Amino acid sequence: MTATTRTRSLRALLLTAAVAITAGAAMTGLSAAPAAAAPAGPYCLWAGDAFPQGASVHAGGWDFGCRTDLFGAARWNTEGASGRADTVGNPGSFGNPVGRFSPGARQPGTSYNDYCVGNQLIEGTEDVYEAVPTTGGLFWRAAGPISQWRFRGAAPEPTWRSSSLCRDGELL
Image 1 (cartoon, rainbow, N blue to C red):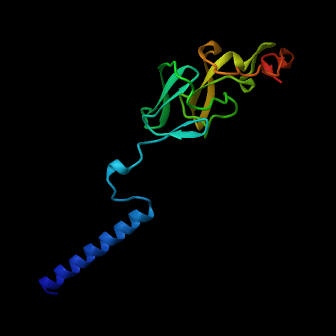
Image 2: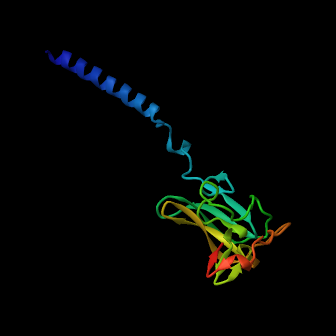
Image 3: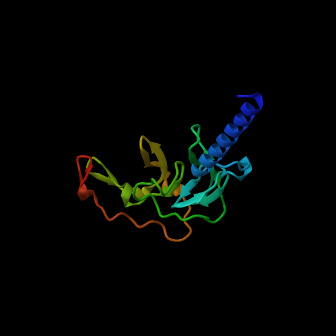
């Protein structure tokens, strides 16, 4: 094989490899687009709506900013009190927050958060709850008294439960 033939074979091999890499990148969703065209990191969820990094929302008299935690996961940071009207829905802390809220989001309590201390019922509506990450998901953790949440309109309905449903710290 002559030097010219080897050079042509090497060029053909390199061209074939470049085509294969480009096709593979296109199939896996990668592209040669500039970094500025890429999404701005993970999105934060609030009541099922997605917000990009850097976005701010107003809820319950507070400002929340969409940021990332130390591991690069999306989260809401409380950025202080706000005099602005709510810009997002606030359905309350019912059900599992996974897929509806990102960590750091806060919501007024609901009967979903009711619990017992001894034979006394503690109503979930007495507190504001924050979505907190745990192994494999999120849960609602009490973050402060309900007096920290400003309602524009109706406050949450009182729980339908009573202390008669509490037995030795268990909610029946």
